[in-house]
Image 1 (cartoon, rainbow, N blue to C red):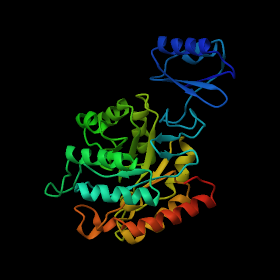
Image 2: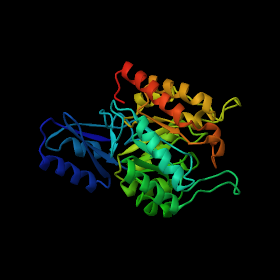
Image 3: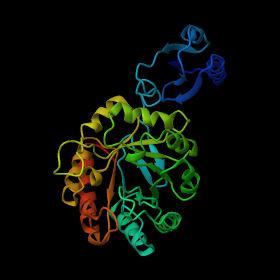
Image 4: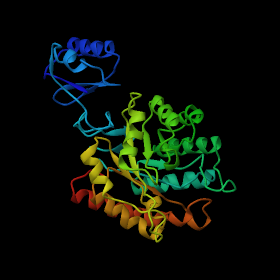
Length: 337
């Protein structure tokens, strides 16, 4: 449930409500809005808890949260969440663009492409140091050396580093180098990992699993949010269907639906969502038109020679054109690029 405080409620009154919530065996989470403060009471239902909290001084009302995902729900937080790190701004009217190669392959490769995407207008640099691959014989990434190269690219360009973490025991290592921790589609329901990235306090980019429903997606985000880490971005990267003309099916109706359901920003990945470089620019424009708060796009200096996913990576020239087109679409619907 949520305890809605009266406008102008004092900090002492808010602290008293927090104390009462915890005495009831529930967890409290304070959300400061533009007009009033809301205190969420999280945990198993307690008989009499609503009545006990309603009598608190400064309390306007106590409202049950109907959605299974409590912290992600619009019932808890009406204001749109803005995730901001370095120059990357995603959500609440801002369109953040994250770009780079699927995997970090060499120093020259990642530094060259970092400068390219920065000049084209990206604010975040993507690149995998640890790569989950279907085949155990495929390139698995440069691991910590790759993280070091990403950090060097950030130092040269100022881009926020967005990179995947695959296991709870990797979180502290990756957090030493990254600005945003990415949880990949394969790990969307790796609950120990979700809790670990939440406890890191870094922003998290959570990718939807290819067979996950929206409720499952939001409940995965809830694992991160319940740690107290509110800087979560949801990423639609395509789902598995019967279609075989694209790598996955990119359901852009996800974007407005999530905006009706949650306050969290929504990022779209047209690279994985289509699996074909020739379709990426069109779907990126469509995602922005649908209201996406961010894009994450694969870019490689020489896609034909990429060690992973080259067939869906844009060339630097194609990426520049895509960013220009997406910014025009964003301006047309009143979003800031």
